[in-house]
Length: 257
Image (cartoon, rainbow, N blue to C red; front, side, top):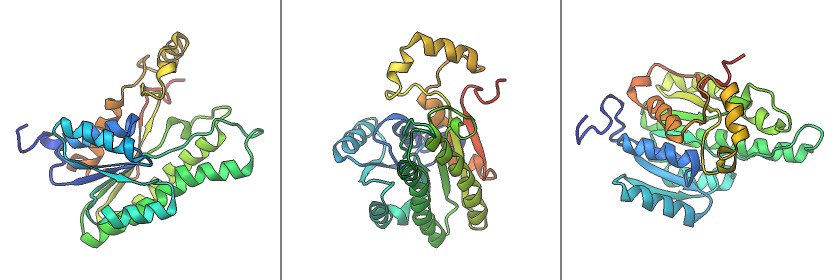
């Protein structure tokens, strides 16, 4: 590793990465990881203040960052994002997601449909616009979708999120098939329990710590940077022959019987 190759074999120097929903949480950590690997990072979020503050924080650490404000789940905003930055994005991370913790008997069809629009259709729309730019430029781009272990684990009171993330993993495989001839890889990461600021109250709950101790193979919460490392790998040349896959980052949650 040297000053001109900050990440060694996993260097992303000379590439531009767009990470949606990256003003905080795992989105911000993934953006930080991509920036540390040498990529120029485009942060995205709905609120200008939060996005600008996150961009300033990463710049203060010496990373190359710009802000792109807009709701990545809104069709008109997606069109603006694609028009503004789509012609230069090499790496797209679809991280935006909403959650409505209601089950089948409590959630009406309209609410179910709205969550799918945000978590699944939004990822499709942005991917379509951004990858068209990759195809037009002839670059071997990368798309990484952020799924969840809930895509394959039934959980009471979380019906729409489970359906959306299952759909996102199917979309990952279908997009990989369509974009493979253009040299563009499409993969997904599926986080388990990650200790983000959003999960702060649960992280401090001894009951959750006990549950994770029995439910995961590693017996602990995951750290956001552990998810970021997988995204950097999938975005790098070291993962150039991996496509259509979902990688669980869950401490062994889906493996344990």
